[in-house]
Image 1: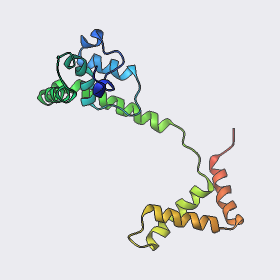
Image 2 (image 1 turned 120 degrees about the vertical axis):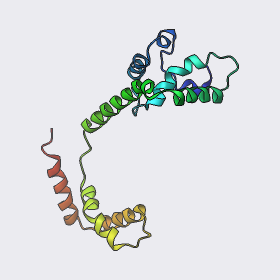
Image 3 (image 1 turned 30 degrees about the horizontal axis):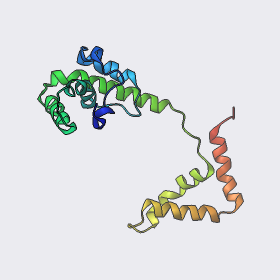
Image 4 (image 1 turned 180 degrees about the vertical axis):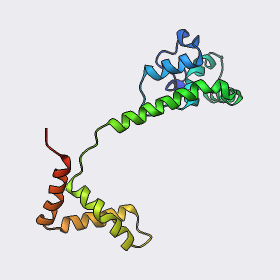
Length: 164
């Protein structure tokens, strides 16, 4: 198999997956290996078609991708729908899982930056980048006395809630 396209293939790109319908293949491909981000309908189609297209002797990776891309463009919306539907379903599941992931609690410094950033941004020059503004805020934080820092730190502790 060509190394260029090998990463696009699902783990089980065998004869058993080549005989599946597009919807069944897409479901199996999505379930075989969870990805960091949901796959697009086109990517699911490519995963199904590359094992078939790669059997053409003498094809280069560019030619294979051109053939598969031409197939996708030539498909009707009805034929693309199973791939697009599965892609949308996986996007929603990914978003739900991402929202359910517990967020790291804010620190006193985070609260300080969140409170001061809008004022520093509006008072600064239009050419100030976010990096410059954050550097200025870091300098201000370092110059704060411990009593002021403890105010932010205690607010952060209160936001965390009871410790477990």
